[in-house]
Each structure stands twice: as C-alpha cells, then as structure tokens.
Image (tube, rainbow, N blue to C red; front, side, top):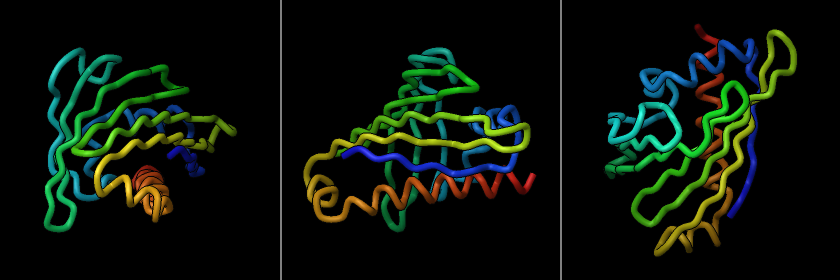
Length: 144
C-alpha cells in the first residue's frame, strides 16, 4: 500500500529541519515513543540503524530504523521495520516562502499476517496515523 500526506508548517524550512533532525525532539511529537537507541553507523546519516521503542496501549513495539537518504533540507528517508511490518518513508520538505514549509510524507507499507488483513480492510488507519504524526510535529514546532 502506498499513500502521501502533507502538512503546512508556519516556520522557515531551516527551523523545521533543525527540529526534525534532532532525535531528542521525537518524544515531543511521536506519541508512545519510550526510547530511541542508536545501533550502528554514523548517527543520523545514511546507513545508520536505530531502534525505536513504543508503547501503544498495552503493547510494546520495537522498530528498526535504517536511514536510506539524507539530503536535507530537501529529503530524509528511511525504512522502518517491526514484526510483520516494512515501511519505506520519504520525507520531503518544501519551502513555500520564508515563513512556510510543506512537509510531504510518501509512505509504502508491506505487511504480513494480521496486519496484511488490516491494510486490505482498513487502509485509512495507516494514513490517519501518519497524519497524526505530521500534525503533532507541526503543533510542536509552531509552539516553540
């Protein structure tokens, strides 16, 4: 399944990137994030791997992030893998003017097991969750 979502952020692109590219800020806009742990490679650079730990309700989810493209301020992309889920995310940051940036997120999901059924029956859930993260980031960034 593939989809795109975007959000307008009322900030200069340089400021958006500074906030986005700092892993310490993730807890401010990713609900349920418990911990971010660097595993290998140069932190924050192409090829780097990190483990993200989330609490989602009563479940704990571990996800591996592999950075596949870091061409900031234009693009930051990665592959996110968890049990039964493979997600390729391309984040594009488009400067509209000196005080407005569009964050466009292009997502491709491949799932197995129960999640494969979920994608088929309710694909909107994945898109809605992605939108939530983008809006959370917008609110966090614009509140600073």
